[in-house]
Length: 430
Image (cartoon, rainbow, N blue to C red):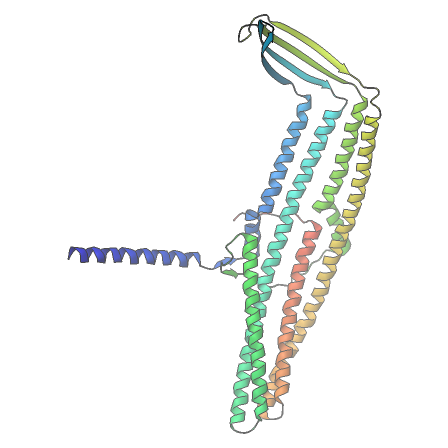
């Protein structure tokens, strides 16, 4: 009896644990409801690209301190232990020195290094913003892809439902001898085609969800429910104004201008080689034959000036190298700004083209629905053909898919335009 009771107790514990694990799995598998803003915020908080650019920014910030050290004092402590052997004699020597040095004038090199480091920090800041804009675009496109495939899945399901209803009508009429067997067969074939399209639409929807999960940092098998719908919100800024905004705000264009200034500072740094340098140094030391060498104290204070009027053309060569780098940076900036303008123009024109298709396809959907209803009524009345109904249903499905595609193209082109313009990312913490 005792063993039997013990066995029952263990079984109860195991069942309880299993239920707890099952509840945990169910809780983890619960759908996640997301708005577009939610998706963007999650992507910004989890994507490693931002963390990498933040690390680069921190490195650039520390480089300013490194550059400023050229005009700051430096303290050095040196201790030497020496054992010398010459014939039968052994000599020990313990030497300790403390020196303090500072550059009083470097010909402008330190100041140029500091200015260049500050400019590189601005480049790094711009790179962080560029990374955020790219991630925002990826999240936006991923979210809109879910909306597109969700609507396409709905259209495919409607097509299957419509064809199933039509097939029942055809079968009923065939049963009473009012239509030929070919109508039944043709309708069955069309239903099979629609069912195949539905399978593909479901797969596209599942892939879109996995892709967004990957972008925003969720497990790939997380079930996502999107709250928004595809909308048509008109863009009001003119193309010329959009281009001007991009040239002033696009991170790549800003970086290109900063890179020119960095190379100009490099020219100043190279030119400093023609100027003298002045430094001051104070040293004190102790030397003795016994460790730690604390006797025989000595000290010195010195001022050192160095000027190299001739270095076999090395300084002039460095200056010319820096001048060439300025020319290269200038041309790269021009090339970058041309590319920025092209990006804006392409996104703007694609958006405008998609916007025109929205209105056209919306009308096509309305006409297609009316045509499909008429074809169904005519077929039921015996004055229309089965092909008329099938053709009307195919045309309606195509019109709906075209409308969804136009809405998707408009919204993604608009998102690409915002990215091409360099509109700053406003982070929303979730």
